[in-house]
Length: 318
Image (cartoon, rainbow, N blue to C red; front, top):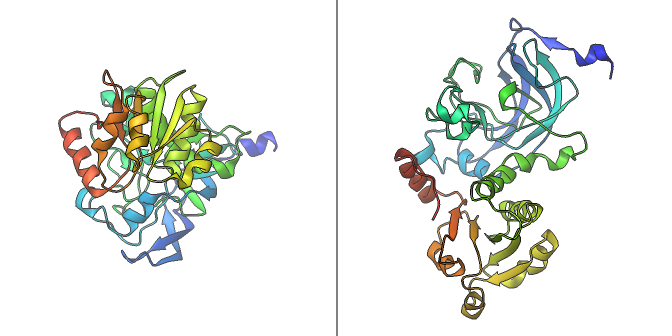
């Protein structure tokens, strides 16, 4: 790529961008390809030539309106997708973080207030004024998440072109497979955060409940940090897969003898199951002094509980 190509910039007076999206028109999830528009790029915006977008369980819940009781009404047409991976095709004149040709990802949010203590500490996901989601969000901070027409909810990553403020773009290393990067923006961050918060490191005994997209990502991240990983599942059907992902041990939660053998053997449990179940049954696997179970599986009851805890300033864990 020539130096001239790398210096491509965009102007704030350009017209909105016509883009193709995979959108649904109702909670029936009747997806179809639709031509929609994104805002004219601003000086601090990056335009992404989308290559891949992961499909998250939350995409289905939101598209189907399952979360309206806690996340608010969904405006249709709705475009999900918050596991974006693509290539920078243009940058605004004020952009310093990216250049044309860079690999870029976008995760679950596209804006935050940038002025509260949480934002200044680099934890925009905990913005005290509420961050703006990559889809079904509402622009509220200086038009950094503005949509076309004004006031519509944000359109996600099921699209051929995406526009984002450079602050909320994530630079993907050139050597990292772009086709594998999308899930890191959601499942990867989701599993990394509690491991980081609870200082999981060499020798920490970590349990992973559920071996779906979150679970397998959690195994790999925990192992990369030097943890000893135990997968907890309802049956032995995924034992071979757990071992392939790097797990050291496997516990069948429906087997009382297996649960007894593993009693008090874990320092931290990451529970990824996205439906209601007996969370407290896993407490016997934790050490008595300081053992923690962190709930990560998303469903209506859990989101409601998280909302209550957020109102009183607490983090959500057991």
